Length: 177
Image (cartoon, rainbow, N blue to C red):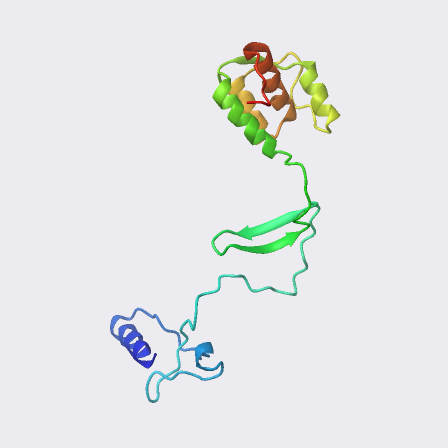
């Protein structure tokens, strides 16, 4: 340990890299409270005693955020740890993730230059499910542009219009695809 500190100290002094900081080192591996001295009369240095912890330090003066979601999970894939969760076991519908699957089916099965007419049935389905009406009945839009509207604006009307167009023009089972 001391030889490693000496080598790093020499690199620090000769190359001016500033690897070390003149801060006390409390080595957990040495028993938890010993200060490691580099050499006689030198300043103690801070070196990592073990693996670096990148978790943030909680400022308890800041209030918890107010979340309106029914379920939340914050997962760190690099450490394979759940950092925060509320009602993570609650089963919920996948909501707008359905639009991603809709986009995949549209891209694979509908020509993006197809012209799609917005039908009243698409608007009614969207309103019935609590969605808005961001498109007009009779409006004609390319499938590629509707796809963008569906994904960027999260438009249910655009999604229903694409599904309706698929059924009319290609005669297949959209959900089955």
